[in-house]
Image 1 (cartoon, rainbow, N blue to C red):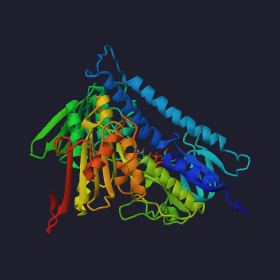
Image 2 (image 1 turned 120 degrees about the vertical axis):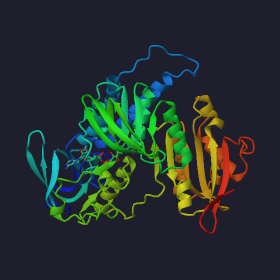
Image 3 (image 1 turned 90 degrees about the horizontal axis):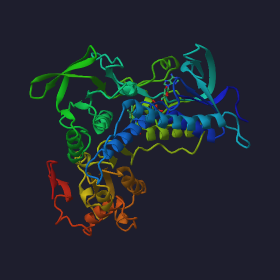
Image 4 (image 1 turned 30 degrees about the vertical axis):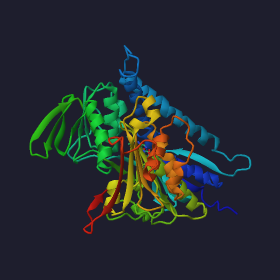
Amino acid sequence: MPDTSREFDVTVIGAGPSGFAAAMRSWDFGKRVCLVERGRLGGAGVHNGALSSKTMWELSRDYRNATRRDRGFTTTGVEVHFGAVCEAVRMATDTKVEHMTRQLRELATPLPGHPGSITLVRGQAKFVDAHTLQVEDPETGERRSISSHAFVIATGSRPRTLPDIHVDGEVILDSDHIESLSRFPKSLVILGAGVVGCEYATIFSNFGQTKVNLIDRAERILPFEDADVSRLCSSNLERKGVTIHHRASLVSMRRDGDEVEYTIEHATGGRETIRVERALVSIGRVPNFEGLELAKIGVAMTDKGQLQVDDTQTSVPHIYAAGDVTLDIALVSIGEIEGRHAAERICGAPYQPLSYDNLSTIMFLDPEVAAIGINEQEAQKRRIPYRVAVYNYALVNRAIAMRATDGFVKLLVTDDEEMRILGMRALGVHASTTIEGVSLMMQSNRSVRELAELLHPHPAVTEGLQDCVRMLMGTSIHKPEVFRNDLRLSRVDYAPDGAPHSS
Ligand SMILES: Cc1cc2nc3c(=O)[nH]c(=O)nc-3n(C[C@H](O)[C@H](O)[C@H](O)COP(=O)(O)OP(=O)(O)OC[C@H]3O[C@@H](n4cnc5c(N)ncnc54)[C@H](O)[C@@H]3O)c2cc1C
């Protein structure tokens, strides 16, 4: 007999990708599900985040390609208006919201032969006790009480701010404000050269209407990637007119009239004050759990003030957390997997702990960068002997045909007969496609050799990966002995003092 002593079996707070996935997976088990959302369906997975920024990135790339002069045609009179770009972004996000709305509408009541239902409740949720939420509609002020056997907190994250910088949303912005710009700014400074900062530097420089400055505290952008990856991405940004203030620390940033004045201090000691039209502060995200009254119901926090979560379960056994709110890895795919996993644990599906191994990611830069497994700097940090092969897109027919040879595939394998894949980076057109096969091979712990024998369609960018694998086996079609600048093959081991040695 199902326990109907409470209104819902599972209540999910937040209808971003993590919460939506948790709700849908709970529905699979025939549960009475409640999904609470205070804002727009889709959260940052759709609005002011993954889908909106990727739509803008695609449009910016189309524009850049349309205005190139090396493709056998010259276009004239190509105009771009920021408002029209935002309209196209809104069409994309509306499409996604429509899909979500349709599904929620159709699953609101049980279907024939399926007892599950999902009730969407609009409003801001907070716990009244460990089994009861109070949800307040911000517009009407109406309050509703919801009781549930289990909960999934999927309330996401928001942009991090700094105490000394007033983000006013007009002149000094964060990533939530991009679409409120009324036109392309003539100049823009981006504070923070992480993934989001670099993606927006790519987008605005692709459109070519804005002079972009990027403030980077570190020696090079994307410091978590190998130097060759970071070098290609930064030289492409610089080629498009982006000024990267490397090793610069921000001294001050303030609105002055309708502009921004900021001062940076260079590592060499000198200070520089620059005026720009707009600033984008992009220095990470913080989790949204204030206001949920978690302390009241005994949900424990870590010493660093983050949610204490073990395999999506909080310290209160029937309360789970998924996605950005846990601040482990802020990605749609991870949020969805965590949301589904939390739902499975709640609903008693066979238990298998979550694994973040073989996580693949993609950064929407110029070119796009897809990654899986470890890179060289990580292998060296862990003193793992490895073989590495780098294969430039300049030798890949599909990239040649697309007139887009900027990029390379880099494959790391164990330095033994087995040649198990340790990691891969693909930079260039269709990079995300290139990584898929490798992701599957890593998942099933197969040897890289199997890739050498696959029959690829031609021309496909994956042929570069295949010849890269063959290069590791000494059987490539293009020979590293000839294409010394485009193909690299080496073996890295370690001296007794741990210093890496490449041969
Ligand atoms: C500019 C940008 C670009 C990105 N690009 C990518 C990308 O290319 N690929 C990728 O994988 N990831 C990307 N991300 C990250 C991705 O958007 C997030 O990891 C993902 O949205 C997290 O999903 P979530 O459901 O955990 O949280 P969110 O998407 O933030 O959703 C949380 C939801 O909870 C609601 N909520 C919060 N508190 C309450 C409450 N008390 N009551 C009711 N509702 C509440 C919010 O309104 C929101 O709708 C990007 C993020 C940004 C900012």
